[in-house]
Structure formats: structure tokens, C-alpha cells
Image (cartoon, rainbow, N blue to C red):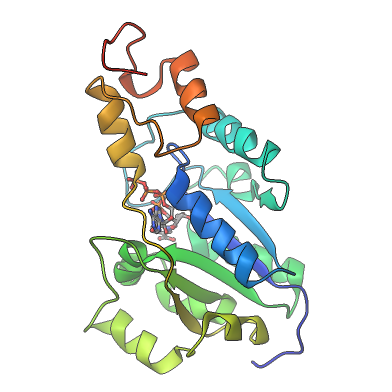
Length: 224
Ligand SMILES: Nc1ncnc2c1ncn2[C@@H]1O[C@H](COP(=O)(O)OP(=O)(O)OP(=O)(O)O)[C@@H](O)[C@H]1O
Ligand SMILES: O=C(O)c1ccc[n+]([C@@H]2O[C@H](COP(=O)([O-])O)[C@@H](O)[C@H]2O)c1
């Protein structure tokens, strides 16, 4: 549906275990490209398709709040924490859609997540509820064949900014300087006694150290 331009809502859903500069740069790209939009980070309480996070839900939220203290234009959407069930995006988006009416809604994800979209719960309903904006991520590409590739070909817009003119139903692709950073790599570095410094905000590294997360050893000679 082509709408008049109401408030654009952009959501980056994730596990944020922990939040890192890849996530934050994605969010900043959105603030740059859609200056009038509300951009929110939305932590999953019980992320589908993956093991239980290494940090508790409370710790993941505390880390996100630390970031938001210095990034006032970003918001935190905690609605998935209120449901005692897997954080299926389609369920969340149904709730969000009821709240925002026909305003444009954009769900942001990396190419790795988009490539597996057809494994998501009721995935074919997603575009009835939102637009999807895919961001290039190292080591993964837009799918070239299969149902997700077909959907992309049918529903794609030529420029990400066009998504602000649709309430739902469209898919954009956005290039940004690719950052080969993942929470997995950060957790692995910490577990091995190496410092993940400069892959995530210092305030998050401090938090991880104070709480001994991800196997952090206070006296590790290589940790920092
Ligand atoms: N460096 C990055 N570049 C682009 N997209 C990213 C990047 N890091 C995360 N994303 C995207 O952000 C969303 C949330 O990611 P998530 O919180 O799972 O982080 P992750 O680094 O992929 O974590 P993990 O390594 O634990 O799987 C996903 O859509 C993912 O594709
Ligand atoms: O709805 C699903 O089936 C589904 C399956 C995998 C991931 N997601 C959502 O995609 C976002 C990124 O997930 P993750 O596991 O990469 O952090 C997060 O908001 C998840 O809830 C959703």
C-alpha cells in the first residue's frame, strides 16, 4: 500500500548478546537515511532458532540501556520481553501494526538473517505487516535462488529511502561500510582470554568485565 508519509518506524530486532558496533552502525545508518524516523533496538526475550543467550535478559537490557544513554536518538523497544514465549517476529509485528496503524514500518536485518527468512514462523505473513530492509553483512549475500530470492525480486524497491512511502510489503537493500563483527566472535574472544576491545563500545566491555560475562577472567593476561 502506498501511503502518505506518516511517522516511519524502524526496528532492529536482535539477541544483542552483546550489542556491538555492527548493530550500532546499522542503527546510525538508519538515522542518517531516515532522519524523521523512530529507530528502535528490540531485544528478543527468547530468540527463536538459537541457543539460550550467554547473558541474562536483564543483562542484555542493561547493556542496551548503557548504549542508549549516549545515543539519545535511538529508542529501546522491550515489548518482546513481556511475552513468555519464543519471540516470533510475526507476532510482535502484528502487535506493532495495531499500534501504528498505516504508518510505514521497516524491520531491519542483515543478509545472514534475510537468507534464512523462510525458516521463520509464518514467514509469508511478514510482508503483510512490515517492509524489510536488508543490510549487507560480510560472509553472507542476498539469496540468489529459492523462495526468499523470489520474494525479493517481486517486492524490491530500488532505493532504501523508498520504503518510507510504503506501510508494508516492500523489501529494500542497503549498502553500508561492512563491519565483520558478530556477538559470537566477541564471546569467543572473551572466552579465549583475548580482548574484544574496539569491536563494541567501551562501556559494554566494562560491563562484561564487571559482571564476568561470557567466561571473562579478571586476571587473564591477554584480557583488557
Ligand atoms: N556486523 C553486522 N552487519 C550487518 N548486520 C548485522 C551485523 N551484526 C548483526 N547484524 C544483524 O543484526 C540483527 C541482530 O543480530 P544479533 O543480535 O543476532 O547479532 P549477531 O552478531 O548476529 O549475533 P550472534 O553472533 O550471537 O549470532 C540480525 O538481523 C543480524 O543480521
Ligand atoms: O520469527 C521467527 O521465527 C524468527 C526467527 C529467527 C530470528 N527472528 C528475529 O530476528 C531478529 C534477529 O535474530 P537473531 O537470532 O539473529 O538475534 C530477532 O528479532 C529475532 O526475534 C525471528
